[in-house]
Length: 358
Image 1 (cartoon, one colour):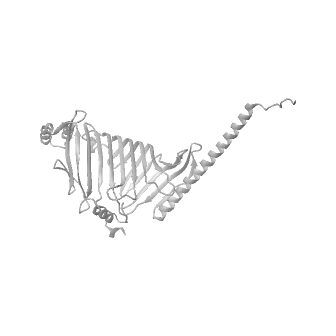
Image 2 (image 1 turned 30 degrees about the vertical axis):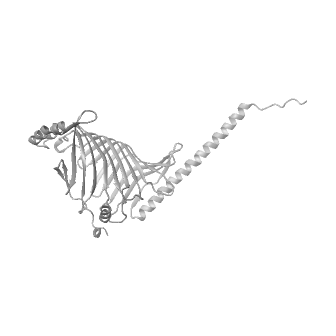
């Protein structure tokens, strides 16, 4: 009977197997990262080619790959995008110190478009300079189809406006589109919210009647379909109106100084392609709001006193037991009326004529 052969210790074999597995895993991860970086670069090049064929100008310094090992990223220094169509006379120009296209592994189904540093946006004759601690767009990636929507997030967004600098503590906007929407279905849905909005100072240093800071602002809207195709906005607007198109403001809420307000409305276009519609407005803090408007000289003291006298007759306790005023809203003939009292008249909405767009 032969003595049993000597077996090699088990621990070194386990260690060797683990090492081989780690090397294979690292090599696979490197290949995945390289593939994702290449796909981002090729996808951006295709987008640029399409936009240039449409007459846009897209320029940037030499792109750089980055992000390994946790993400695959393409850095675009000194990005400039210039374009537009008939919907925006004068076009637009976006200039960014740097844009970063990033896919964070293993979330390969979502593209992050990050814009750190200082940016400049020109829309027609208006120019805005802005920067943010965080400014990122999240776009879903689907094979063979462009994104149907997306989400934009911002933190400590600083803007330079014609009225002066302003700042937004946090903001979020989500978009969802449907190219196959039929009548009554949503072709575009928008949800937006912002907090801690510091407004520009009023002329002469006087702040807004309710204070420079808007605590919170949020909106939920849906544009019904179908949205007709075409080059000329006025023709598309007429077709959309004639098909019964509407813009539903499902919710519009505001917390600003002493005021808490919520509104909803359904809007359409009249024969002159001007907004018209009806809705309702619920207001808490109407009394202090009247006092603030009168103090700022925006409402006459006699009118404020009269309104304050009838407020108790119009107020009802809400679910929280606080007094609340609910008023009907109408928009007709470019005039906003609250409880049938005209409060604001709008400038006419100008539609570019087709003969000026050729």
